[in-house]
Amino acid sequence: MTALQHVRLGTYYVVPMAGSDDFEEWRDHARRLLMADVPPDRVAWTEPGGSAGDLFSHGDRRLPVLDRDAAPPRVSKRFMDIAKTVLLNADPTRFSLLYRVLWRLQTKPRLIEDMADPDVRAMADMARAVRRDIHKMRAFVRFRVVEEEAEDGSRAEHYVAWFEPFHHILRHNAGFFTRRFANMRWSILTPRGSLHWDGETLREGPPATRADAPSGDPAEDLWRSYYASIFNPARLKVGAMLKEMPRKYWKNMPEAQLIPELIAGAQAREATMVEKGALDMGERPETLAAIDKAIHVCARCPIGELHNTAVMGEGPQDAFLMIVGEQPGDQEDLAGRPFVGPAGQLLDVHLAQAGIDRSAAYVTNTVKHFKYVQRGKRRLHQSPTAKEIDMCRWWVESERMIVQPKLVLAMGASAARGMLGRTVSVTKARGTLIPLEDGSELWVTAHPSYLLRLDGAGREEQERLFREDLAAVSARLAQLQAA
Image 1 (tube, one colour):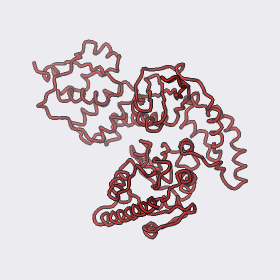
Image 2 (cartoon, helix red, strand yellow):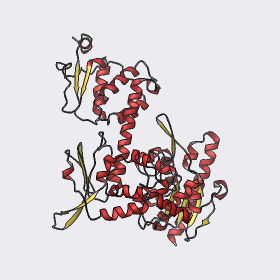
Image 3 (cartoon, one colour):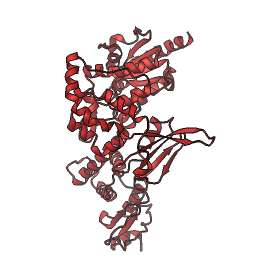
Image 4 (cartoon, one colour):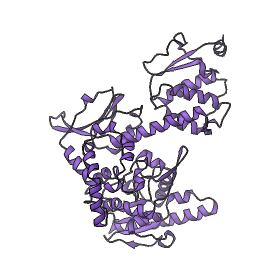
């Protein structure tokens, strides 16, 4: 009897998943079942260590033999992208939901675009919940320092954080934390597993309990003082704050102890600030790390209140060249790094052609959060207003004061305004040296995303101008470095 005949006679299959968040494993099982023509109602997917229940207690745990002569499944990139996120959801029905949609896609290739379909809506809801959980982990993890004895007998600092995710996002977020805290030795403990980073190697560990994490450290008083100093009563919206920072996370955040007191005094502080005629920006941050912490809690303009994550600049602190863009895009917001999306990839190509080493430059944006409008499942870019750019100048100016570059390359009108405090025409300003008050030089060019929106002869002409601008910057850099 063939595997296909076996299925059509009524065999039920039980698929025990070895990993809760292993998309490749689910894909391989789903492909085998689909190519053997096994319908969704004859498959039971189980979590690691879970049971299929009475209905499938006698199901076949041996998957059908892969029929290499069968037509391969038809899958759109959009389905794959959403499915990878859905699989991280903790809902035990996610495996069967994904297989059911995959099965239906074979006869309805455009099903994934039908948001009126219950299965497609369920996938969208699961993916949205996962993305929210990913954002919460990145925003609300708080490390506490503990001292450990090193092999040579010296004392070494180890940073430990406790977090309780709703979904299977720990492994997905590992790259974010290894990049953001690359020079620290840290551990993140959760009820679903743990991550341990020694500065070079990332290890996974077993689930932990709250008692395994430290409850506090001497640095918490400093963190609370810092949070109180940047708390902005003019932007206070209690309902929005609780939505973005649910009380569930407060017990792990030292600054949360101050929130009731700060809310109570918010109206009085706002009245004082209005009387002064300006918002109190406080003392300038003295380090890039301090700027990084500050922008992640900044909500001085409406962009900071969107469902996004602040993106800090990156590069050498003593860079000769500082490259400034407008704001993070969708991919930069998700990755937590500047210029990693299509515009960043195009920029890398042109920088290499001009002989400019991006790794030697400090790359940042004048606006630190992604401004967008939600259109269904997509987040569409929106340009920041002049007021929003001016509000965010505090941070990019602080970065420039710390890095002290000899040359600043502003890409686009927003970046130029962030450097100059006034709007300039890219067409008129490009290719000319603009002296800044600290003795550095500003050069203006187009933003790579502008080039991506063009086609045909228009794009060829603008890319030619972009290459010429970068060539001029490269030549000027060589002169400055040789001086």
